[in-house]
Length: 489
Image 1 (cartoon, rainbow, N blue to C red):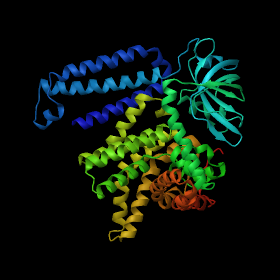
Image 2: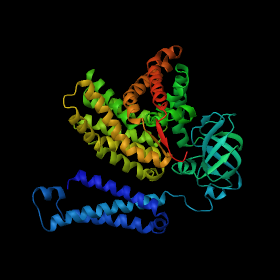
Image 3: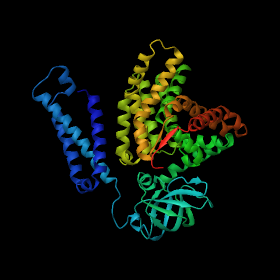
Image 4: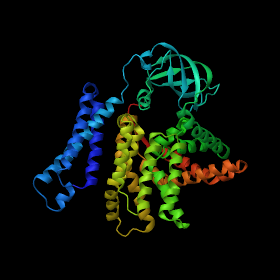
């Protein structure tokens, strides 16, 4: 077994550990310490066995048998066991700790406290929402609170507030599991229509670090609003910044019914294509591979920060970095291993993503479908049309790509939303190709709009036409009476 396979299966063992801990949570919490000890012991034993063995892949290649090859196999099995226990332990320690200082213990009671606006406020049609952190009620409290406040006055990131409100446990909102959505962010308490008094600004280092990024996001929003009208402006802000709340419910339904909701989300496919385009553009103007890599990398990091560092943007940025690194060293990137490695890193940071984050599940399912199912479907189309013209080949490849993604994402969508889009393969065939152009043209237009704001509508004209086309496709395909199938709606 080669080293790449060992890494691949080790990451899968980590996923399995997280999944098992989410199913058997009560038992795993009781044995939390034992799983940590088992992970450490297994790692130590794997290292110890490695010192007395040849690398397994070398032993198999050279036909080695006996104690050394056996030690290598034992060390690999111990490594997998270590990652399995690590996944279980990491999920259990991510759960809220029951202590007198836990803010969620006050759910159902009125609470007066001081807190910091720890997330950028999101404007909504009937108000604004934000997250409170760094809580203080005659002593620090552990946890965060999701707040829904009146539309005015507007609050800002990093403000220190005095808040009086009744805390509530997050509940279902129609068919949306709001509690699960907030749990991914470590939030277990909500507050509606609080009494708020602004005390000043929080000048801690973390707030000072993120405040310029928030300011840049606000400048970007204003540039988009100058250059685009609704609904194109709201759609583009959702596309780039992840501000889905600004899209009308009617338009969101159109995208969901036509199977195009994933295009509005921040996507690893978009980032990868854009990074590759920039990389080869810099090569074309005379830069070396090394220079092009170091020129594109800061832009990639800046975009992830601009998007607010949500899981989707981190995942997309990590995938884009691995592709850039492959271009830099001149070797083709194994996308499946890059995908699994990025998933493992993200689950070590936040293990709740695997079970509770729908976007995480859909993104990885779509890419896995593209990796493993696309070649099979494309070969089938090729056998059906052996003498394909270039146009037929392009259409069949796009259809194969969308079908491959839909095969694995459809069960997840049906499980969460009880709805299946029957026109999704055709709709994606007409829509997927436009996404990189929307991102590239839109980001360029935003930069020019900041420098020359009076010409904003001119700069955004190409991106605006692409967005109009995308909306037209969503409305057209969702208009068929058989466009989607719902259960329990």
